[in-house]
Length: 319
Length: 159
Image (cartoon, rainbow over all chains, first blue to last red; front, side):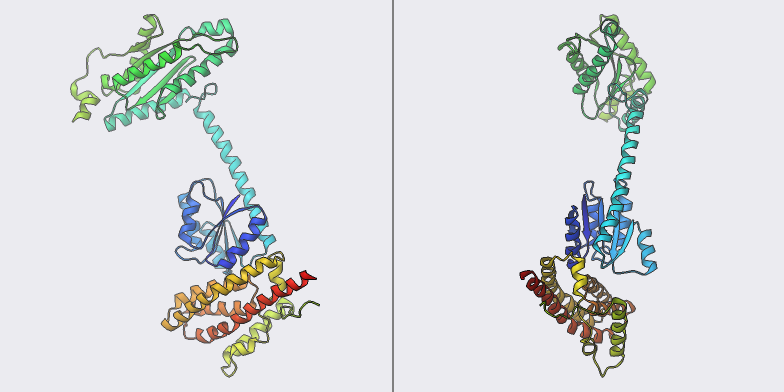
């Protein structure tokens, strides 16, 4: 466990350092309050600190306030270690955000016991954060493919369309549907079907940029939101995905399977200021066309009436 | 035989009361300087210090070296603060010295540093001069006691 000692008294620092290192702590030190606050607010900074009250730059209570103000998590356990022992000082130190308060000179056994208490609190906090993160993941991800789930990808779609409208940049939606997926389930069983879906998710993710969003839309359908991607690039991207499926068979426990995909594409470049649902309907219609045309192909949605020039994002961006 | 040393003292409560009494008398009566009065009180509680560092004599030696290097700088800061009438600096340096001396289990010097800190806090710079002189006289005794302590321990471990 990494721990920071912030104290302008070098004798005190050395004594405490010795005690802590013998107890297995990894000790870092500073003699100055501002440096202590900066180190503790760093994402990979120490999770525990012993702070002197009076230090050059920023005093101990101010360091506590700064850490509590700037760093939400993970929690940092702060212990004030000082020669000040008025009740008012104790209250002020704790009110500033310290977790504990020890008077110098401190007895090594007591110091270590107090730090063990701190470690228990940190462990409990870590456990709670892990549980919360797991719940958050489950609430937003598809359990089979670990892609965004339907609710979340719809939220992303609405946010990105709103952002694109505000920033006057294009955004594209792709609905991808595995061809003849029902026959995979029927012929090889649902476990192989699951394998195919997981592999499909991996291949799609391998074809998009880190800041694109991919979600599981339905059983064997996936929705992609590509931000800042114009119509021509979106078509290329869709074709890239289609090729990634068709070119190499999917490895499964029942042997390699040839799996193809049909994709419906819509780009705001072609449709202007439409809402998410309307764009999705257009992408869905394009997907339907791709399926009707024989599957394993990309269908592109085209507006029946081209948008007026001022309603096109690219036209707006040119201004 | 281990070297007789003046770090062996009376129980803490008695020591504290006696120390306070002597210092208070000394500081009120200018005929006797505090440094003279405090010669009678041990400058270092060696047993307490050794217990605090888990009997690590090498660490005490290291702390002694740090103290001998750091203390003159702090005393110089105090002298400057007194000369320039800077109460805040008096308080800050008094506080730092108090912590350092308390860690080293040097009770007399700790009390003197605490008094300087308090006088600085109250803005009573001129009243701090006498206490500063007492502290300046006490510091060499602390240094000597620290060195005697580790020398005594080395002799013990040689046997």
